[in-house]
Structures are given as C-alpha cells and as structure tokens.
Image 1: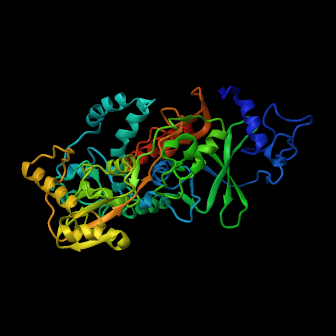
Image 2: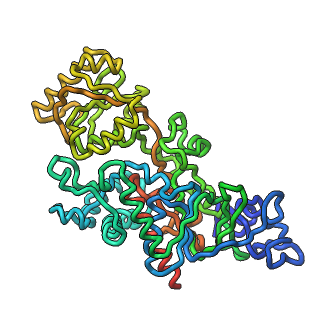
Image 3: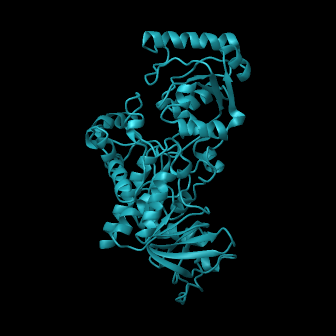
Length: 503
C-alpha cells in the first residue's frame, strides 16, 4: 500500500521513529537492527520504546472492541458489538460520558420511525433518500454514495432501537405536530437541549449489556504489531499524567471534529480561522492519530457550519415565531433555518444579531428550553418590553428601523407570503411584551475527516484498508451535520466490526 508516496511499511517506520505510532512486542517487520528486538518490545532501534521520554508498550487492559469517544457516534457504535456478546470498552478524555452530544440542541432528522408512525406520521427512509440523492449529487461533496445512503437510512433504525431497546425518551410529537413544526424532527423528552433523556438511557443500557466505560484517558498513539497492524491504543491518564496501553482486536475512532484546534482550522479552513469554536473539546486528536497511521484526509477544506453561541436559541425558529435583526434593527434572514443566521451575520460583518420573540415561544412546545435559555443567559436577554420603542432602546438599535422592520414583517404575515426572505414556518405576528436575545457567530461542526471504506474502515490515500481501525461521526467527512447521522455513522462502524470479528 502507498501513502504519501511511500509504501505503508516505510511510512510506518517513519511514524514509529517519530513516536507518533508505537510498536508492541518487538520491531516492525523489516526494521529490526542486527539481532532484532526482544519479546517485550525493548531493544528495537526503530521502536518508540527507545525514544527519549517514551515509555515502552505494556498492555494493562484488553478488549474486543475499543471505542475512542463517548459522544452519540461512539455510544451508537457500541450497540451492535455489545449485543453480539463482544467485550466492548468505551474511553473518553473527559471526566464524563457524552462528549459534546450532551450539550447539543437535540434535533434529530428521521423518517419512518416507530415514534412518528405511532403519531400518525407516515414516512419511508428509502423514499426520502431518493429525494435527497439529487441534492447530494449536485453538491458533489460525497465520494461514497453507498456510505451516505447507509448513514441516511440507518437513522431510522437507530431511533427505533434506542427507544425500544434502551429506553431513550423522545418528546411526544403531539406537542408540535399540528403547529406547523417539521414532523421529520425528533426531539428528546423535554424538547430542545434535553439530550440527557436520550443518551443517559443509552449509556446505562450499554453498561447493563456488558460495556465498560473508562474516563479521563486521552488517546495519543496507535500501537501496532510487528506486521504494522494496529493492535491497541496508548492513552494519557489526565489525572496522573502516566500512560496506559489498552489492547484491542478492533478500534473505532469516534473522537469528534477539529473545530477547536486552531492550528488545524488555520491550515485547512483559513476562511474561518477568526471565528471562535462553539465547543471546547473538538481538538482533532483522532484525525491526527489516523493520519500518523497512514490514513488520508478528505474534504478538509470544507467550511464548517456556523452556529450561534446560543445554539439552542437558533433552533427556536423551527418550533415557534421569532424575528431576527441586525445591530441596526433590520431583518436580514428567514428565521426557520438554524445555520443561516450565523452565516449571514458573519458574511455580512454584523458582529452579532438579535432574536426577538414573545409569549408564543414561551408557552409553545419548547417552553422548557425557552425558559432555561432565558434564565441561563440573562446577560444576553432584554425585556419584557411593552412597545417596540422600549425594545429598541433596550437593544440599543434605531427605533425607526426596528418599527419599519416589524411593519414589513407584519405586512408579509397579512399577505401570507414572505417575498423578501422566503420564510415558511411560523410566519406569524409578534405582540407585546417583546423579548430579545443577542447572538454571536461561531464555528460549529467541521466537515473534513478520514478517508474510509463503505463499511467505515480507515484507508490510506489510495483506498487500501488499514487493518482493525474504523472511523465514525465527525472523524469522517460523510457523517452529516446533525446528531442522527452521526449516530447512524456509529451504527455502521459497530455493524462492520461485528462482521469483521466473525472472520
């Protein structure tokens, strides 16, 4: 196999010599000095064991399936292996399970799930895929349409299984199905921002089925055998700073994106380097480890979706009325798409923008989340205000401009059509008392990731599979932007390792 102009063995020699990849049980084949190395791995002149400051490989634990990351992709990747009776270990660098998925908005786009059908909402994921396919083909962002198809349709299987087999709780669709909100969106039990009610039951169920979780361990290196095949991972214990080596038959990398790694963003997505990251833990460790092993990056220059730093507030437009304005009080976007507002704000150079709302949101289907965000972000909240003049003063925007904005908006409501921006959902007038919340645009999920096979196995740049390593979620380029495709991506990896372990 070739990688960056080198055959894989030569590539691994360089990686081992640098300490980026470690060798267990002796020299990498063809690399041993005269006399070879001993069985414990020391004495190999090319092995990382002899690099200054690098501890020799010594496996302290062993598992069939080792999953790096416990976000929604990692948790979902564990489902099939643990249900097949394999020993599964999930490891996270944080001191808690869930990664950044626990703080996500919780919108899951699914078609044809049991929950939807029980609420009288029919749908078929294959039919939806056929409608979605031309959009993907036009964008030209997907290299493996079979993989993308599986990601799309497995979202439905995932939703059914986490509800039926693990006790995940979703908000009853009756809460919003007749309001005009999209019924293709499933939400956790209490609505937007309540991912605990989906992921905690999944975690508990995995543990009950035999999976184990280890926290405060940051993955740093792949460990390969003498043939160069990955057989484990080295971790740094974040509590005591010592290394810990875990042996595994199959390894699934679900470590998230790289939006918080400023060096990688500056290198691959320089147009967004001046934006801050919405989250703080997506450092691209999995990308870098896979690259050191001979993996190849794909679509790293695809710009990340942008999001507000109050991400959940931008989702309100799917479930209730609001009006969004610039610092000058002018409406600038249709309010029913969560990523459009921060993108338009950044591209327009506004710096920040406002979401204006009234009691309709506060008493609607997402009242739990509206109340929580108003309470938790009181420094961004203005109101209640009884007039638009009072609201403009509180927001420090020109009153005349704000009143003109609302006059145009209300005229569009009366006409039943938003000809200026094309808003479809909740084209409804607002009434006093008025409230407003201030947003700033941030980077959200990065799209670049590892090149993989259709069953998610890591490959080199020529598409040759790299043994024993699979990638899912935001470590791959085709996992999608939201929670449910990342979950489906995890399912694909889990199914693949179950099949591989049969061999």
